[in-house]
Image (cartoon, rainbow over all chains, first blue to last red; front, side, top):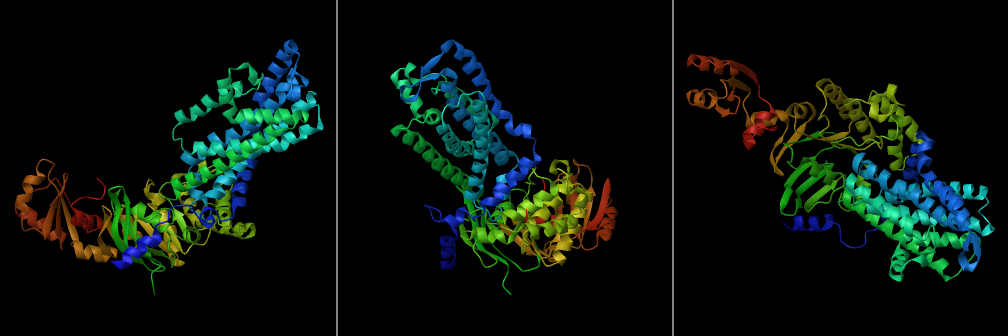
Length: 278
Length: 307
């Protein structure tokens, strides 16, 4: 009887913070390698399919509406052309779209349909390896979209400062945050209907996060609501970097995404463990 | 020599429901060990606890001298797992599935290049190396899943319902592959609800029902202990079976009435059939066969394995 009791105590995992060795085998590289192989097998058209949406907005709103609007007040009170005002915001959206595409629908497929994570987690891989590998993959797509978009606005002459190069690492940060949280949230969703809710959240967030006009047009309580949303921070961060205007808020915006990344990664890791390694 | 797997009082409960309710068994190195039981008996749960992907609620469990509850990654590194449903990577091609799976274990590309070829040959899939996984037949997918489970040269291969859903020909091909594997000294742990599979593949097995062990031993031993050498199957038509059974008293050692037929357990089935005819009873069809694990299960639980 006493043997049974000690056995039970030894076998049952203690509650609390799990050890790093139980979460990771340090073999994150193999998860990335797998994803690179998949990209190589894939059609490049599929990889960049989500890239065009912000480009179309830029052309329609920036060049079309911009002709009516003329100049607006940019970061630090300097006047900027309307197209140059919305271009950084659309760049942030582009990074978000890339990250979300992979971390929601692709993750849903691998989680619920192809059982990829189940098979990965019956090897030496730990849940943190899988979570981070998949999030970095989504981030990669976000970066790819952002670089492409940056190229487009450079060609259109909407980049006015060398500071704008900082928008590349900013795009990585934004994509990281969205990818991590996107995957964490997706791990809770079990049906296609629930997956549709993601678009239901993303579209209004895109339209109202001061992307196409300043946040000042809203009543104050709505402003606070928007300032709680991640895209607004991405938009404002990009807008500041595009002209090289820095203030305390630059840090607030950046740290928002650092927090979002850490939260999303922890959430995803624990969810994968709960789902496949009970 | 100590067993490669040993379980004592192993339990898994979900709320009030006990999926595995205190089982004891030992698996010796190199043997083929079976868990036989109906769906929901707790076989897969036991497999997942051995495989280090499910925590046990109680009892002791040791796999290769390690505790799969607390030393999970180490245990998983030495096991091959073939789950009930294929979970091949459909975004990769056949050969890539083997190579990448080895990479997850941290194996080098050069080792895996040779390993993948060897395993493709073992699974008889050389011609399909560059094929997409979705284009494989059910039997081929299963063989690829088994080959994948062997990439890390596991000392124990866990097979959960390896031939469920396969046609008879594909099952025989698969059994042949598993025999070869056993000859190389790999320990096999197989769950199944097919009696013929258990008889074909397992040196020793436990019969499980409602999370408990009903009996254990070699297939032959179990049949000897819990059944007779032969079985006479009689069909009088579903309406008459129950009525006729009264008149069969004393024929064979005992009998069992199923909805569609009567089973008469006897050492000599033909003699029993003559006795039935001598009593003026004329079944619609009759069949004398060797006793099987199905009969053992029926004897132990009063139910057939597949309802």
